[in-house]
Length: 491
Ligand SMILES: [Zn+2]
Image 1 (cartoon, helix red, strand yellow):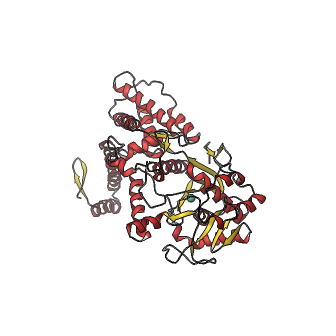
Image 2 (tube, helix red, strand yellow; image 1 turned 180 degrees about the vertical axis):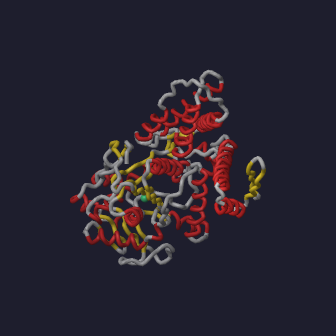
Image 3 (cartoon, rainbow, N blue to C red; image 1 turned 30 degrees about the vertical axis):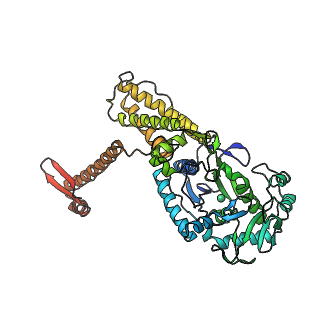
C-alpha cells in the first residue's frame, strides 16, 4: 500500500513507518473498558484516539480486524493482584448478579461511544467468555517453566523469566527496582518475589465468578485476557496493540512477558498509547474520585461543569490535542472547542451558497498538508488547523475578499468531507448535512428515471416497467407527464 504513515511505537520509543505483517490486512487490538461504572473523559480519549487510527487505516485501503475487549472478570481493586474483583464488588454492593452489572454498563458504554461517533470494533470479546483460552495460556507458561503454583493460584515468575528474556522492555522498569516499590499486601507472601503477578487466582466457594481449572476453582489474572483473546482473534503475531498510557505498566508489560513465556517471542509489532486527561494538572480517574462521566458532560450535571457539552464538542476537544500529549480539562477549553467546531461547520455550510468566480486564488496545499499531518503519527491538531485555514478562505470569499472558482469550491467541500467528517469522524446532524443527503438522494432518483426514459425511447418496455414497478413497491409514486416523469415518496 502506497503511503507514509508513521506511528510512534512505545516498544521501540521512536516513530516508525507502518508496515503490516499481512498486507492488506491489519490486526488491531485495543484494551476496552472494565464495565463496572460509567465511562468518563479518559475512556473517551482512548476510544476516540483508536477510532481515528481505525478510520485512517481503512481510508488508506487496509482491511482492519479491530478487536476491543470487555473486561468483566479478574480486574482487581489494586493492580498488585489484591483486593476484590471490581465487578463482583459492585454487584455485591448493589445486590445484583455480576453479569447484570456488566450488561448494564456495557449497554451504556455502547450508547455513549455511539454518541461520540466512535465506530464499533469488529469483535468485542468478553474476558469471561474466554476462560478456556486463558487456562490454556497459563498452562503453557507453566509448562515452559515461567510460572509456579501456590495453593491454587498461579504466579508468573519474573526473576526466572528475566534470566532468559529481558523483562521491562515496554516500560523500562527493571524487576530489581520494583522490589522496594511494591506495597506489601495480604497474599503477597504466596509470591516468590513481589514483582511476580497472578496468572490465575484461587476463589473461595462464596465467590460467584469462579471456574474450574487444573489448579482448582478460581479466575484468571487480569493481564491474561488480552494475550489470550488477541492471539485467538488476531494470531500469534499481529500488527497493533493500543491503550491508555496508564496501561503500559503493569498491564502491557505483563502481556509481553506472557506472550514470550508462552510462545517464545513477542506477539505485537507496534504498541501505541494515548496520554491521559488531567484536571488542574492531575490525572482524571475513577479511582482518584475526580472523574466526570461522559453522561455528565452531555447533560452538564456535574458541579465542575458550567454548562452541558454535546458529544461532538467532546470529540473535537479531544482531537484538538495530539494523542500523546496530555489534555487538561477546563470549561473555558471546552467552550473554545465548541466555538471552533461551529466555525468549521458554518464554513462548510457556506460553500454551497458561494457563487463561483472565473478567477481563482492560490489555495495552499491544504489536502496534502492534512495527509502529511496524519502520516506524522496521527497529528490531528495540525489537520484541524488546516481546516481552520480552509474556513478562513471560505469566510473571506463570503465577504468578497477572495474569489473562488468552481474547482476551488469543490476542493474545499471534498477537504471537509474527507478530513472533518470521514477521518476525524465529526458529525454535523445539522440541516445542512441533512439537505446534502436529500440532494444526493434526489439526484440518484433522477439518474434512475433517466435510465428508464432511455429504455422507453428504445422501446425496451421490460426495463422501463421493471424500474417503475420496483420503485412503486419501494413506496415511490411515478407519474409520466408531458413535461417528463415526476416522482414522490408515499411514505
Ligand atoms: Zn488489556
